[in-house]
Length: 317
Image 1 (cartoon, rainbow, N blue to C red):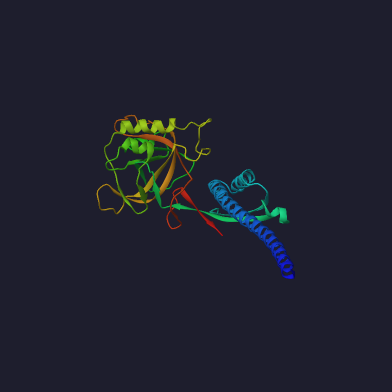
Image 2 (image 1 turned 45 degrees about the vertical axis):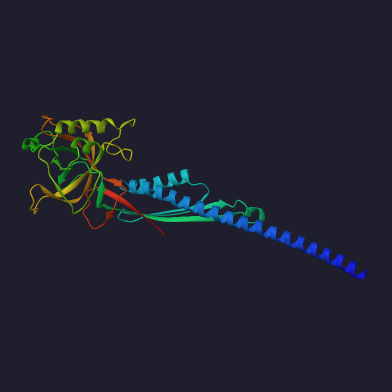
């Protein structure tokens, strides 16, 4: 009888211990789940913050080309617009206006840990954007200009026709626009959409004496028509990627042994203001516009001449 009572008590004690263990295990599992969930949430939010800061740095670097104060203004405005709960924002611009360092900190509320006393966490992101000269570009138009001193923002007349009289006309700044051989591709389509293959500095490209210039002039007019912004883009107020902005290689023809061969020294950007200016549209192309400082996503280097086409390199630290 005594043994039976003792056995019942032992079973009751074991049931009580099991219940305690179960409750403790459940609490631990819930706590671990909360920690894992919030840690994952923080990691995702930190990644999002990095990507948003990259975009802001790109916009700031583009603005830096024109003005340092405008760059700082663009960064501040876009940070406030795109990122909530900012607790700290530091912006530093180098003396040569070629590098921006941005450091940002924001408050992030926990999802589950706030119920056990942990309210929020501060996360941060830091990036440096460096503006350098482009060494490779995919999408050049089938033209080139010979190396010369370029004045940005000044009106130029570019023509494929070598006409000395143009230099003494109303077009004060005249440059020869050299048609480029694009192989099997269509010249007019190349003007409209750019070349499919990337061109690098140091590459040899070849001049073209004859082509379908009439269709080429039509393609220039289409580029202007494709700009649908209201009011229309201008050389100093444009949307990034405006079809009126074309990228042209800058070349050197001196010391090149092959006929019609040219060495690519770099790249420049030209904003087309007016097309179809050549009097004889069947034998030449004439466009009026201005060279601009312009940023693109491409390979860059500090070791080549600056012809106005710039790329932005981002580095997190």
